[in-house]
Every structure is written in C-alpha cells, then in structure tokens.
Length: 345
Image (cartoon, rainbow, N blue to C red; front, side, top):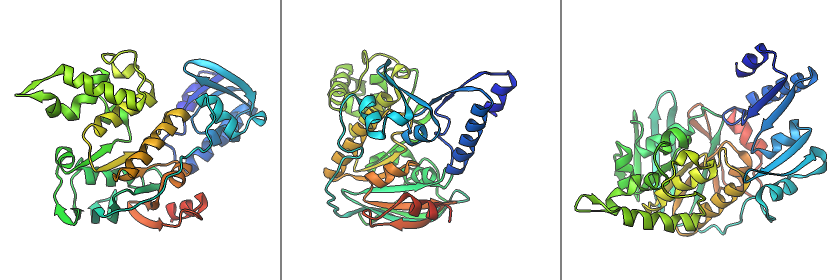
C-alpha cells in the first residue's frame, strides 16, 4: 500500500527505510520482485537496510554511513560482506558472531503445554543455566506470544511454568521480574521505552526500589548506577537527561539492556534484540549475550535473522502457527534450509 501510494503521486525517486524488517521471507521475495520491476520502469530507489544479504540481491551501488558520515560508495560487485562490515564498524571483525565455549548447568526453566489459542498451542521446552536457546520461525509463528506468556504479559489459557523444578504462577510482568525473569521486547519504542522521558529515567524504571530509601528516590544513586552501565555498555548519549527518543536504535537497545542488567535477573528473553541496529552495535550485543551466558544466565534468543540464530544459539526451536515444529541440537551441521523447512511445515 505504501508503494502504491507513492506511485500514485508519480514518484520518480522512492526511499525505502528498512522495508523488510517485519516481513516473512515470501513477502520479502515479492518486495524484491516489485523493486526490480520499478527499476525497469526507470524509478530511482534508495534502499536503507542493515541486512547485508539484501544489498547483494537488489542493489547496484552501496553507500556506507557511520556516525552520520559517508564512509564510502562502491559498486556492489566491488565489495564483499566482510569489507562492508569493516566499513560500517570502523574496524576489522574476525567473526560476525563471536565464539563461545558452551557450559550448560542445571535446568532453570521448563514450560509444559502452554496455550493461548490461536497464537500459542501446546508449547513445551526447557532452558538451562548458561544456555542460549534460539527460537525462530516466520513472523506470526507465535514466538513473541510465547515469550509474553512466560513473562506474564498475557494470561495463559492453560499450561505449566516451572522454575528450578517448582511450579510457579506468573500473572504479571512484575511477578516475572520478582521470579528473576526479564524480557527485552520486540518493539523497544512502544513496549520497552518511554520515548519522551530521559535516558536515565528509562534506565531507572524497573529499578526504582534499589535507588530509593524510605520511599524517596535518590537521584544521585540513580545517576551513579546509570553511569556505570553506560560505561560498560558503551552507551553514547550526549547527556543522561536527553530524551531517549534522540538516541540511535543501537543506543536505545543498550539502555533497555542496562535497565534489565541492573536487576541481575537469571533468565533473560531477547526478542529481536538486533532489529534496526547497525553491525557494530549488533556485535556488541552478541558479545554481551555470550558474556551473560558465560556467567550462568539462561537466555532465550528470539530472532527472524537465520544467520543470527545459527551463529548465536546452542540449540534452536522452530515454531509454525503457534506450535514447535522442530528442534535442532547439532549446531555444527545446521543450515538455514533445514530451519525454513521446519518453519513452513
């Protein structure tokens, strides 16, 4: 509809900003067919994306921006993926996904027959200390809905949640946090942040009792803790009092991370943690996920990016129409094709 609207005004230049972010693979293929047809008709297209494989498929030239500055412009055939990553990040990355030694501990979470029809149907799985469990599938497969059930954001129709072997009832996010579970939401702008409030206020929201004494909030304690996390996560903000809407997507996501890390929860659910952020910030988040797993945190990583799921997970669950349709445990031989076959089962 957006493309049709633009063409109805006889547009000669079409700017597409992350148009594939929430599309299924079939919808992306159809989008690319439309783009190629528009090119044949003489339209000039500016296609903004963090997905490097898309650049290879449809672009003629690629312009790399970093910190608001044009770094290079090249014909797509003249640069490979590694060169693009190096230009975007400003340094050489040996691996797009950092390596980690897997050390699994005790089972910390198990869910049995979770149901919230029609979105979630009979979902069962377990999660161990030190594990990164990937969950993937097409958009609308029930991944986010499953995470929301575990976090208490939506009520269960039926099913059981156990923590460390003991059954628990989680009826709200507040109860989930008290049980040591946090969720980095899929849409950070509408669900993870209060955009008109400051950076430090967003960091403090789930941690107010830790910054308070006798019911009074200590702004100095709040600021000290924020600055500690800002330094460790490399959060780039001109000042802590700046509205968080002024920050880049990567820095906004780091603030969301910081506010939950300050809670020191044991189970962390990342829902599309790198959507809409640059390669450099992605790599920093990958390093942090690995560090958290090495510290014994149990992590669920939900992502539509198949290279990300394959590169970061110790084990992968694939969902389709609310059900788990497959599990991949041999990460050495796992492929995107295998995942997609299970995702459209």
